[in-house]
Image 1 (tube, rainbow, N blue to C red):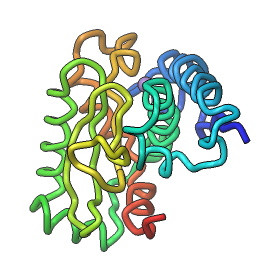
Image 2: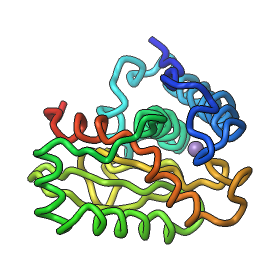
Image 3: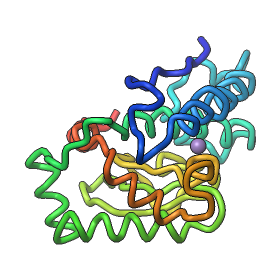
Length: 203
Ligand code: MN
């Protein structure tokens, strides 16, 4: 059963001026679609075909670079679209708010640490907020299309917030100014979804 390209849930121009329509359209219909196509091709007629991305990532060190890069690319983008909302409200569900207070002190401190991870990830990659198996929240980043579900990740756990810092995610509107794109991201974060992922039982 092949994986499918998920819908965004909002129009390409819905996040303007923070993330522009052209970037969203190319990102979804070209970049994400290409990862999906190559991921499906890489797992077709193999034992991975009927596994979940999480199950594949848990043993990613056993699989090819094609599975790692394109499987990561497929999953990470599908998650990233869910992180975004044209109706962003900085209202955190109480258990998430408590955990952020416990592990970061304040939401601003979390944002600062996450923004720093996103800004300093060298080259292409992602910034993550991860819920570890012991419940601890940590910020990390990954190169390329790796993610914290992969067995090769230095910090493993359930990702509950992510930001794509590949140049294709921001170059049309922000050129080389990655920090400006990161600041804009905070204006469109779907905190309801972050809360939902935080409270979800590990599958
Ligand atoms: Mn991307």
